[in-house]
Image 1 (cartoon, rainbow, N blue to C red):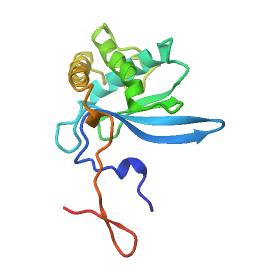
Image 2: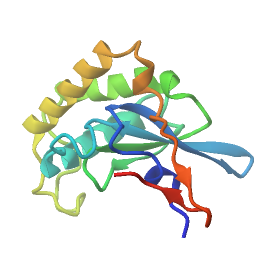
Image 3: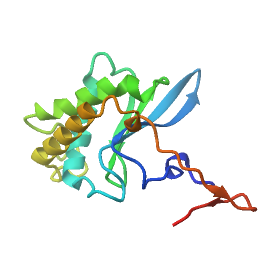
Image 4: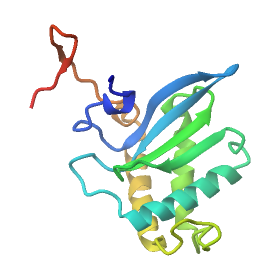
Amino acid sequence: MELIQSFSVDHNLIVPGIFLSRGDAVGGGSVTTYDIRLKKPNREPVIDIAAMHSLEHLIATFLRNNPDWKDEIIYWGPMGCLTGFYLILKGDRQPKEIFPLVLDAFKSVEKADSVPGTEPKNCGHYLMHDLEMAKWYAQEFVSYLEANSDNAEIFEYPRSERLITDEGNQFFDS
């Protein structure tokens, strides 16, 4: 089987940032998946699971209520590796174009008094939330984005060339 695109990026080289993961034609338009990476994979501790869950609720609520973007939002959700989130939008904007949206979304977490949708009828694991840690991670990411907004590295996946074997397989050096 072929590796899917997100598994083909060298995760040992990824830094926190906003990356274009994939673009797809759907119907008469397009849909773009973005990798919103908060942590360096395989080099930093992952995001605490309760904080990740709270960030999911807080930012999904912010995005779907943002008057300028709510009709463009398809999905906001956590990565299984707990190093970031996926954002799926209608259209085909470049990562720099959504930078203000992502920055505002994470800034909005600081203003939260509670996590929306944390009643048993609204959430599959309503007790697993941590607002204070979610605020901490959000502030850490906001500070990072603001300090690196002119750094192209936070908008483009790292490139690494790999040898191809005679059978057509990629060779991964240790």
